[in-house]
Length: 462
Image 1 (cartoon, rainbow, N blue to C red):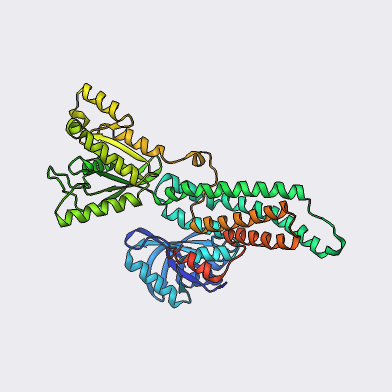
Image 2: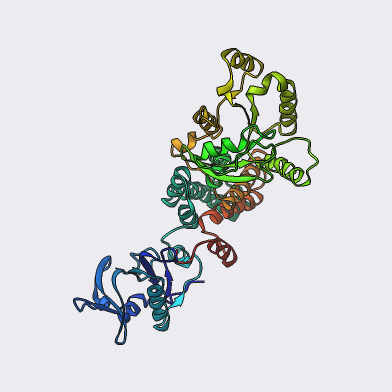
């Protein structure tokens, strides 16, 4: 799979801008760059030092395309580990296309998605989990997901897995050695130390596996369904949370016929709020479809916000409690936030009565934006950010999670074999499988199909 031909791609987003960066990587990258570059000081790019900048023009025969800055990175001291140049040109889409087409004529080919990072992996500049973190870093849209991606790209997760794999590999070697001397009935691997190692590996794997629950919601955002009867202020609450007029607000019950979604970052964590159609009995076909979708969204949500009109609590309190019990019984494992809206219309006595009847209630006024910050803090409390604050390794990648689960299963098999005096040759098979799963995470064990699937999700030019 290793190729050293020269590839080219736009490294900045497509479209017009102040500047654009065109990246070339490969054995002949600098030579090709030199063939289209005219330095204002008549420099020969092929004779320049690595990590230097050069001002000049991109030309094709007598035609000048643009004044540019060319950055030179001589392999292996580059992102890809190969000779690399980056051309910073003006951001006109016409200029970008003309320069790329010129470079293609000079011997480059268009890079595939993620091919620069793939080459960095193949040339040993990054391991596989670090390469995958590059894609996560590019797509991070809040502080928490950015922090996790940076920690993984710096090798925090890789180092933890590599250390476990090395220790297990040492014992595996001793077990294999015992098999060579099976007739002498000798033990080279200290069974007590081996048991301690297996316990330690099991503990670390369980911690990493458990962290996926947090990592997954941080990476993808936490879906929050806002539900309740029609006209209780669900759309007003969504607008207050987002601080913009995202949803249509009307006095007419049943205005929201479909779900409306938008995202908000609270305390560095992404939340995806879903404004749903009001839940009620209706003969309106369109509205009933919206209500059906509401229950589908509750099923998909990780947190449910149940909103009701607190000013109507005197006449509808009993009905409200029935609805709450219905949702609690139907979705017993989902955190439920009970909110009484329009609290600005309540007297002190009415507030006291509602809090007595429903102690866990949060009273707000979405219209006046009172209590919205309390709601945000309550939502944030559902996310266990302790591991994030302590800079612990957090797993966000489904592929890593799957390999960790399989590795844990194999380690537990080895542990059981050790405790039941299983023969060394059978234990060795389980150890090899555990080592294989560790290697799948970091890329010490891989195949073309796996790499193709991973890097196909990258953007062109990275």
